[in-house]
Length: 498
Ligand SMILES: Cc1cc2nc3c(=O)[nH]c(=O)nc-3n(C[C@H](O)[C@H](O)[C@H](O)COP(=O)(O)OP(=O)(O)OC[C@H]3O[C@@H](n4cnc5c(N)ncnc54)[C@H](O)[C@@H]3O)c2cc1C
View 1 (cartoon, rainbow, N blue to C red):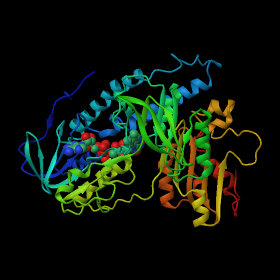
View 2: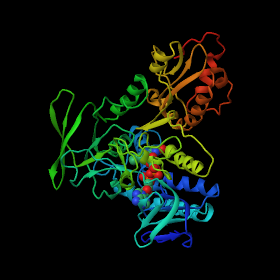
View 3: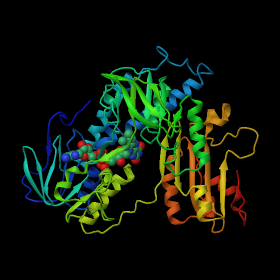
View 4: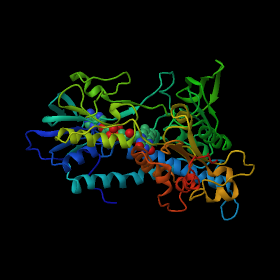
């Protein structure tokens, strides 16, 4: 494979005669790289400084991409396990009762180099970014950045895009061998058997389902009522949890991690349940899906204001309280997602280069991966009933129908729909019954996630059921929302369907 640079060493790709930069981006992750690209495209002179050996940040290193990689394997193994030796399905590939994890991780690490290389090539050759790799930046003041061995870089503006690292709960035993977060999971060097995943979260559940699917005895521990942190209805929550339970993956909710136990390496965890009783769970691996903490320490010494979770406080223009210092991405806290990191970098670039823009982050679509994608946008049915009053809902499966209903029916669920219809998913779309406006949607299944990006747009535009029914579906489409809406949109007074 071609490598454009030796990623074990510091790498320079910048004009060292530059006296002053228009902007220095600290961090070349999603936010820094997209912000830099937009800045450059607008004609600004930028420099991006990245402490790690590649551009793209944690997403392609060990976060989003790894999460989707493990999710996909979990879904494939889940199907192989369900169809074990039936029809053309082969015998489920078990070794000592378990699929090996280490080869899967090794392949990820090898394949990741293609992504790193591509990002490097695109950034250097096509986007014409100037950057330093494998070099850590410090901020001296609002207009001076230093790098060891390179001295000072002068700049009109700084965009702090240094991201966030894994949060580790303050309990005894987190330093034992066998305790992992997403950041060091790829260093796994043994085959675990008994796994405890802490956090029924977006970063915990894909790992839990993966461990379960490979055959580890897996338990999820969550301090809140399960999935209550997500704005989904109870029926969607229950379906998502039931599908995990059916696969033998228990979620112990309202349960706190008290300690991780062992000497040298993990042997068990102690948890305290909702009844206040402590119990021990055997474990040779503990995976912490307990969120991320912003790396704001880099600018607090120059007086940049932070909030209670160490997040940098920015206004809608991505500006901090210090003139000339902006921040974007995970370091600004709140929802930590790629859209926010990338768009935030772009917004900072626009505002610095005199094209004022306000970043609105309140309304967005989101997904949780288990053995399915659970995706949502807008109001839940419960919220809509409280706020709007008269709502109209299309829901599948149909309530009160005695047989199993094979919807959603689409790629990824075709075989479930015909053999185990209950496993094919769950969906609902919510309208204001009076104004006929689209209010929200939720979906559990496969392949529906993409449409939620555009459903969000329709929601922001105030689309009605009549407009949605007039869209042209590409059948068979995973969410079925267009045709299901069409079944009722001829009615003057909408009546629930489902
Ligand atoms: C397990 C997991 C799964 C996820 N899955 C998804 C998903 O499926 N979809 C989604 O939208 N989001 C997902 N996210 C969130 C997403 O990864 C982040 O929102 C996004 O990567 C944030 O980008 P960023 O640029 O703000 O930060 P980062 O990606 O953290 O990049 C910051 C960069 O700054 C560098 N840096 C730090 N300090 C310095 C310094 N002093 N000098 C120079 N460089 C420095 C770091 O090395 C790093 O490369 C996931 C997160 C996790 C943890």
